Image (cartoon, rainbow over all chains, first blue to last red; front, side):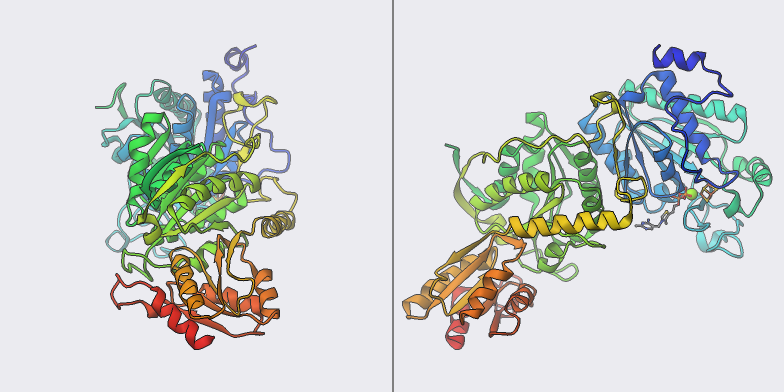
Length: 259
Length: 361
Ligand SMILES: Cc1ncc(C[n+]2csc(CCOP(=O)(O)OP(=O)(O)O)c2C)c(N)n1
Ligand code: SF4
Ligand SMILES: [Mg+2]
C-alpha cells in the first residue's frame, strides 16, 4: 500500500500517522502544550503527499526541537536561530526534496532574524514553520518578539510596556510583503477545525517547493500553559480571546510564481 | 602533471578546493579574502557546483553545517572578524562530527583592526575557537603552492576524522602571486558517509538519519561522558598522526626559530643571513599550527638549543614554544612591535630577526 492510500484509509481521529514516532521513553512536552500537535499535522501532511522519504526537517534549539524526535524523517538540529541557513544549504544540495524548518518565535524573529532576512532576500525555495507561543518557552517564559502588549513574562514582570519594549511582530503579514515569498499563512491547532486548516496550509506550503514557486512560510499559534501561567483549559480561552485577535488566522499570500 | 599557473595564494586555495571535489562554497565579503569568494562566485556555477553569497559569516558557517550534514565536501572562507562570528557553530560541528573546511585569511586586530596582514588568530584557531572541549587540525600554508595543496589535505583530514579543519593563512600569503602546479593529490577513496542526511529514500536501510550537536540528547551517545571520551580520543589520534612541520638547518642549530605563514618565509631568510655570519641558526616551520611539535622542540631543548619565536602578533605562538621547552632553555620573541614601520603596512623583515639572533647567539 502506498503512503498515500494508507493515509487515506487510516482513521483520522484514533489512528497514528506512520511518520509519527511513538514516544516510548516518556513524553517531553508539558500538559496542554500545542507543539506536539504540529508534529502530527506535519506527519499527516507528508503522508498524504507521499513525501516522507523525500523530506528533510531542520529543527531549532527550543521546545520545538523535540519535534525532531517525533517525526520519522531525515533531520538536522541546528544552533539556536540558524535553521534557515542549514535549510538553504540542504535545499541547494537536494533541490527536489522538501526542506522545511521548525522554529520558535524567539528562534526565528529575535536571534534568527539574520538568517530569516537572508532567505527572504534570496527567495530560497524552502518552508519555514514558526511556532508562536508569545514567549521563550524553553528558557522559562521570557518576553519574545511576539509577546502581547501587557503580557506578563519573566522579563516583563509588570507586563510588556509598548513604549519601553515595543509591539509584537506579525510575522506572517510581514513575510507576505516580500516579493520572493510565494506563500504565507497563519494557523492554529487549538480546535479540530483550525488543526485541519493548518495541515492544509502545510500541504500548500510544501507544494510551493515541489513547483519551485518560491519561499513559503507558516506561523502556527501554540499554547504554552506553564509560561502563560494558565491551566491548559484557560490557555485555550486565552488563545481565543487574546492570541487570535492579535494574530488573525488565514492566508496572507498565495501565488504560483514570484515576480 | 597538473596545470601550471601564476596565481595568488587566495586563488590557489580555491583551485585546491576545486580539485579536492569541494561541491559548495558559502561566503560573505571581507578583505583580505574577497578573491576566494569571488573566484567561487565566478567559477562554481559554470561547473554546476553550489555558490551562495551569505547574509553574514553566521550565515556562511551555518550553511556550511547544513551542506556538511548532507555529506558533500563544502567550504567557507573569511578573515578575522568573520572567523570570530563563526565560533559557536565551529563548536557545534565538532560535537556533530561534521567534516568541513574553513579558511581564515588573517588580518589585524583586536576589534575592527586594520584590514591588512597580521597573525593574531593563532590562539583562536589552535584552541578550537568556540566554547567547550574540542580541537581542529590547523594547516598553515606559507606559499601559493601550499595554499593549493594544504587545502586538498584539509578536505581529506576533515573526512578522515569527521571534524572541521581550519586553514590559517594571512593577507601576505593570500595576495602573494607565485607559479604553482595545480595537481589533484590522491589520498585514496573518500570514506562512505552513511550518516549523512539525504532524505530517507536515499538510504539503503530505509532508516532515518539525524545530524545533531547535542550529543546525548537524541541517543547518539549513551551518555555525556561517552561523547567526551570520543572527542578526547579523536583529539589524541589527531595529535599522534597529523603533526607536520618543516625543519630547516636544524641538525646542528644552537638557536632555532619557530614560525608559520609569512613570518616563516622571512625567518628562513634570516637563518640564511645568520649562517653567512657563522651563526648556527635553524628554523622549525609549522605546517600544522595544531597539532604543535612539542616533542620535537623538547628534544632539541634537551640537546641545548635555544628558541626564537617569530610571529606577527604580540605573542601567542611563543606560549606554545615555552610550554614545549618547559623553562629548560631561553625563548626569545620577535613580534608585531618589531615591524619595520609602525603603520598597518609594517612587516616583520629579516634584518630585525637577524638583529635578535645576534643578541641571542
Ligand atoms: C546562542 C544561544 N543563545 C541562547 C540559547 C538559550 N535558548 C535555548 S532555547 C531559547 C529560546 C527558545 O524560545 P523560542 O525560540 O520561542 O522557542 P520555544 O521554546 O518557545 O518553543 C533560548 C534563548 C541558546 N541555546 N543558544
Ligand atoms: S514550556 Fe511551553 S512550549 Fe515548552 S513544552 Fe512546555 S508548554 Fe510547550
Ligand atoms: Mg516561543
